[in-house]
Amino acid sequence: MADLLDLARGAVRRVDFGYFVRPGSETESGDPRVEAVLGYVVRSGDALLLVETGMGSHPEVDAHYRPRRRSLDEALGPLGLRTSDVTHVTNCHLHFDHCGGNPALAGRPVFVQRTELSTARTTEDYTLPELVEGSRYAELDGESEVLPGVLVLPTPGHTDGHQSFVVRLPDGSVVVAGQSHDTATAYAADVLALRAHREGHPPPLPDPRGPWVARLQELDPRVVVFAHDYSVWVP
Image 1 (cartoon, rainbow, N blue to C red):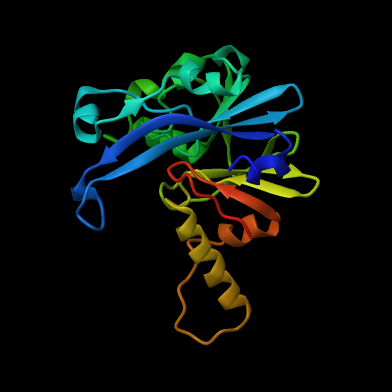
Image 2: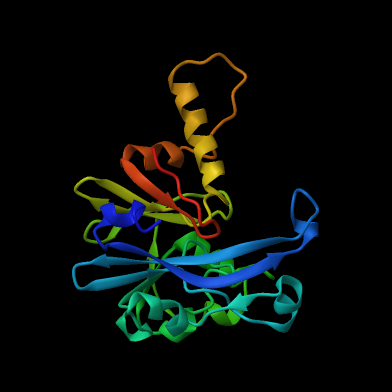
């Protein structure tokens, strides 16, 4: 992983927030599955953007998912960083396992799609309500450059307001896809489906998850990383 992200020249680094155990009732196989909870720090000039902030806590949630958490400082420490170094925050969406550390980062701008924030505030059992209150939100309506060289793109699917992040570099881009796909394998399948459509392969063919897959590919990704998968996609 470190070698793959060398092309980012230190601009994107992975943050390990721990893991949880998804019960068999929520998996295709019926067996429990341990899932990583990953974030990323993105350097843009003097700004340090934290993408994802780890897992929130609630007795029912903890009993259901049996998480093992790392606090913000514990997760950032191996990178030589502290919570106080973070200047900006964003989450691919506002489920409890992506925005758990947001309250500890109050005062920093939090980039979020307007529809995602509205859904999190008004939909019962969407997230832990205390995780979305008290933050200073910068609400977005679609694609936006939030910091120099850092684009936010709507990638709806897992949630209507899901967003992914593209770090533009001289030799290509690093895409922080969040949970646009659960795995690098799933992303690869969408990219291959897109290729088949473009090459005029006769139907039937699977469709990519949305037109945003093509948009991400237009931005010349050299590495695509995910919120719940240590594996990465490379062209």
